[in-house]
Image (cartoon, rainbow, N blue to C red; front, side, top):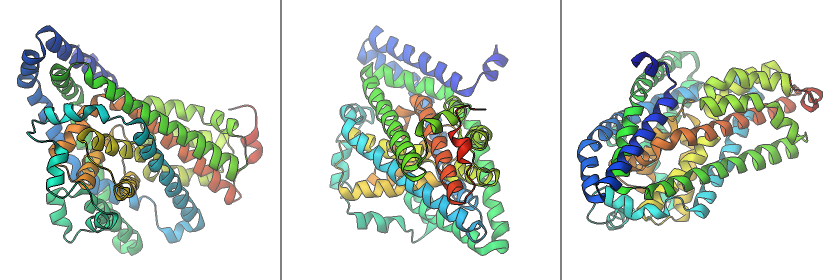
Length: 438
């Protein structure tokens, strides 16, 4: 029985934990009543959920620093990459820019967190709302210049101790660029961070093995205290993410890149990447999908092997448009849930932070959740506990969200690879336009 359970895919175990947690929580809430059921759920399940959340919090700083530094290093030496690298990175940043703003616009229109304000504040045990606390501390509204200055750490070590994630993101990217510019002399330092990233990733995967039990405990607690009320907001959050991702895929990749820039058939592009999309949706991992993505680009779309072999692995590392959309939506979800005012400066800061953070997001399931905690703290000034509370609400449903994020990432990778290949004169348009798909 135990071996069968361990042999099961992690996402399936998480889903089972989700269902069991919901059933237990709803049974307590509606069977014993909201007061008694909520008390039992808080006493018996919340501590285990809190323990799992604490394990997540433990990894935030090391995961962000190591993955961002190694992610920038993975771009390779810009001087050696030449025009290929410059065009690739430029296109990836351009698509990410569109992605994060699409996420912010959709989240503003859909308002996925608008119904959770009382729920969040009551669950956190606050005597005054989070919004009131932040306003009294002067953190509810900041100008863009104030946000921008907050990104630059006067002391990176102190920023790590305080969990100042925006400053850490800035410093980590700068550190990675420094390693690239140093060349061979910086290689040992870069190797250390690449090795450290692998170690931290292994620890992350070990902790994720506990996810089914953490999800069960969190869902039993949340549903036991609140009942079915929370599911409406989760549905709106999923709708907002899927809508933004679909718009990114159709308008930016299909319309702007394939039809306008490449002047090639959009329908053929989507048929050509069907296998990669299927694997991406099922695995929720850009890295795991990479072999299929390369095969689709080469055989179905006529992208030269040299371009596919360099641009697509880089995309699996630095092109995380789905993650950028997700981080923007989660930030807006939190702002709406906590009842915070969002200024234009806040919008720009979320866009900038989500773009920076998505560059080094690991190509594994749910990796962006770790980044979301830090962005919520840095952008809105809420505490780590409050940020993790938002993530705890989302985490049980994250697999469903991550599947669409990965599809967006992989589609963007191939669109950019096709464009770079055409610019470099290494795109076989006859293969791209072919009716059959190998």
